[in-house]
Image 1 (cartoon, rainbow, N blue to C red):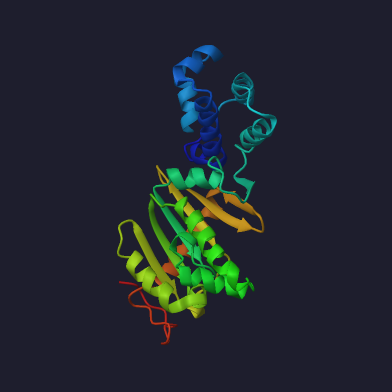
Image 2 (image 1 turned 60 degrees about the horizontal axis):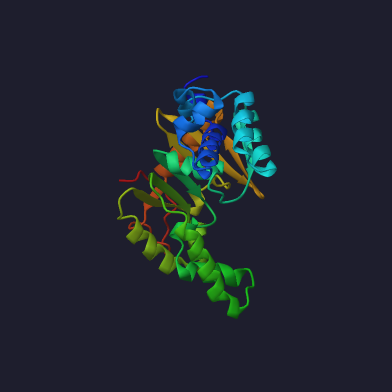
Length: 268
């Protein structure tokens, strides 16, 4: 297995799933390794994503731990994805999902959000404005805000993150949202910049996760699915696109929504 393949999202999700299945049974790593007849070192490498277990080994672990059939099929599907540079999963917030695993293990994250402010950065005014656009009844607005805030609690960011926002993403509540972004940009580990509409030639959102050892995975959302790409040439294309957008971006404190900011410029 190559160094880059050690960071395939399917492998990270697989390792997290094996570890979760073991701890759910209250078994220590050495204890389970002894019962399985494998070395503790091998099991540790499987659970940390540093080595891919054979498909027979995955079946052995899951069978011994007696995981239910739905989880068994999900984890076995992850194992079969390991040799594929593209993997797909349903859009969810499962603790063992590929996206959550990448979020937890990433060193740096680069996000392009042309149409909607990422949920952890949304203000109540922004959420209410979006709800009104979707013709939510007035009595349901408070509930919409509450549900968004509950989801935000589970989306804390630990890695260094750069977020590029398309100017159109601010429109539901430009004033309050921009003020909140200016405050958030002063915090550690987070950079937020605005890309003017004329410079935002790329319409689709994407996220780039950088792992240790300069390994990268791109996540794209398509309808109800997330697509993860680890193929080097494709990943490099998205990295180049992000760098080009960042060169045309404005710091939140510099961006003036009521003035023309369409002229490309180098950020300070």
